[in-house]
Amino acid sequence: MCPCPAAVLLAVAAVYDRRTTFVTDMAESRILITQNGTVGVINIIREGTVQNAFPFKKAYQELLKKGVTEFVIDLNSCELIDDTFLGILLGLGLEVKQKGSCHVRVFKANESLLTLFRGVGLDRLFN
Image (cartoon, rainbow, N blue to C red):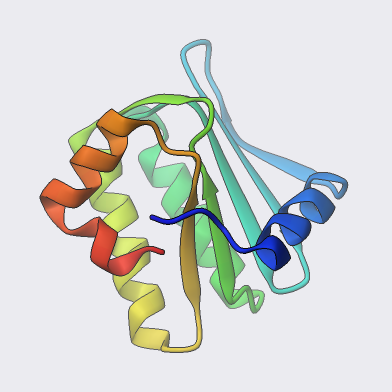
């Protein structure tokens, strides 16, 4: 949950220059997934909810199959994460932990999301 190192931030900038996949595009929220080599950036805009949790899960599982070893979860524009989406994030953290060579980093989470992550132990799975 600490700020991303410069190398990851450069990778994030490079990823945003690449093709972006819209996992969901609902009026209330949007999830953008981008891949650049072994780095996958997940940008959650407005809300991570039950409506977009399972498409998100399918997308990150596809990234794992494609060899992504570094996940950056960009929460700069995220206001809310519900319990279903939180469970999916926990699943991502556990899958990555089992692989051993993968990492998940949280980027620009607001204080309420950080408190939520600490409350359920996601801060121990994510950097």
